[in-house]
Image 1: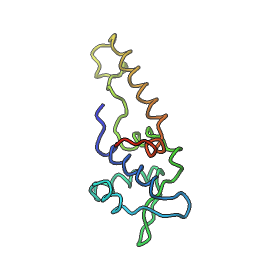
Image 2: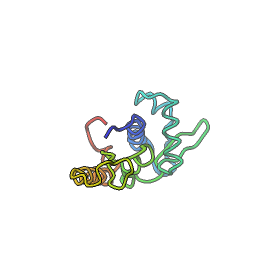
Image 3: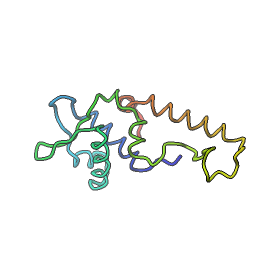
Length: 139
C-alpha cells in the first residue's frame, strides 16, 4: 500500500492543529503557521485542508483572525476517516474476488490479501489523531 503525500501531509497538519488549537472559541491555527512548522507548501496544504473541512474534520474561519481547528475532539477522529477522505482506496492490495480485472476467480491467495486489508483497516479505525499527538515518533 502506497500512502499518498496528501494523506501523510493531512495527518501531519491535523496533528499540528490538534496540538496548537482549541475546541471552543480558543486559538485557531493559520495555514501559514502549519505550512512553516511542517515545511509544506501552502497551496498543497490548502487543497488538503479544503477536503478535510468539507468532510467536517476541521472547521475554518477566514480573515485576519482566521485559521483552523478540529471540528471534534482529537480522540474522536480516526485515521481511517482521514484515509477515506484523502486516499483513492484504503486497501493494501487491490485484489477483489468479484472484480472483472481478476483473472484468477479461484485464487488461493485472496484469503491472505483480504486478511491483510482487514488488519490494516482495523489499525486505521482504532488509531485516533489523539494517539498520533501523544506518540513521540515522527509521522
